[in-house]
Amino acid sequence: MQNPRLASRYAKSLVDLSSEKGQLEAVQADMQFLQQLAKTNPDVVALLKSPIVKPDKKQQILAAIFEGKLNTISAAFIRLLVAKGREGNLPEIAQEFGKQYDILKNISKVKITTAVPVDAAVLDMIKAKVQAGTDKKVSLEASVNPDLIGGFVLESNNNLYDSSVLRDLNDIKKQFAENIYVHNIR
Figure 1 (cartoon, rainbow, N blue to C red):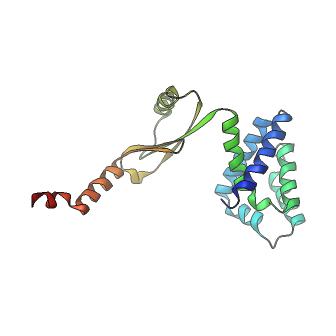
Figure 2: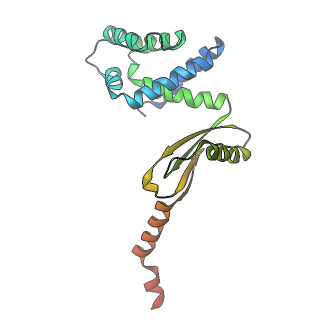
Figure 3: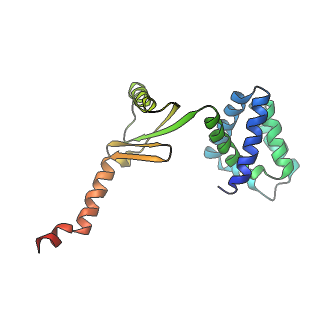
């Protein structure tokens, strides 16, 4: 993150304004859209960060990209960022907005990574188990990483529970590398 304080301040202002106007959910959807766009389209991020492209040209390009896709508050916010020369921080502001939204709505993000895709019923069961241990609503994000071989990795509130075969194999490899058993024989 380039400037977390700046992202936090702009995100807080946007949360406050959208809450005041009763548009918090719509702006949250827009910020998720912007985060996804930043992840999947490096050209848009390059445009936002480019010092060569003039602000008025950026305004035109962004207006064409987001035409009819964003709430009026979100569109006005992006215009403000471009006018202030802060458009390069838009992806991190959108991410920070999501964090502040989750805090405001008492939502806990949980990410589960498995070696193979898991069906929705199993994901619902995992979500129920995780939610049983907390008073927060749980938002479950699932991803697949075949390198895990088997098992799963669960991330929640800066905690990591790694129950993967890859982790077990790495632990065994480390034990053999340390070779603690040879020392105990002598």
